[in-house]
Image (cartoon, rainbow, N blue to C red):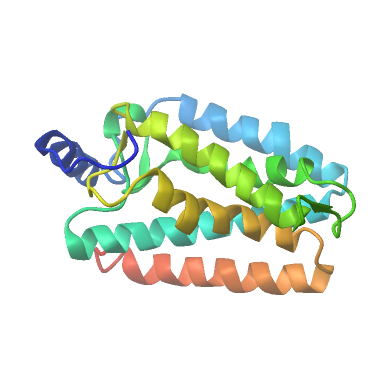
Length: 215
């Protein structure tokens, strides 16, 4: 599936996703297990090995992910449907209409994957393109192609006919991976300022929009 089909089935699935946001009907103990694996298996080793640049990259991608998920939920509130939804049957907990607990945990470590692939030389060009940018485009393409598969399953729902693999590649995944790859080489002070602004904005939006019932 390259784009949403606007079908009655897709709209019905999207309505079910909207109704299931932050309900605990599907909760099970994998929720805790996955969180523990991410913290103990990835974040703590990164901290112990002082891979602070990689941690900054991961937090940058994750922060941009959260901003996009908030905006996706805002679109859902005002237009009736989000650009993407996750089905309640596919998750233990829906955080916002387009992101489940499991999906969010994946994005919390995706930045590590992105920067581990990068050449050591930040100025090296491949095919005439700076490697940080080229690898961001490559990772975005991989995720977009995989999302085609996800959208063909009951787990992930595209409703709008104009939204699909190409728009998500250009407008969503490229910014995700650019944030990780470009902040990776920045001075520590720049990393801290960027992350403080990004996560401060995310926190402010959540604090305001959740009580208002918008997201």
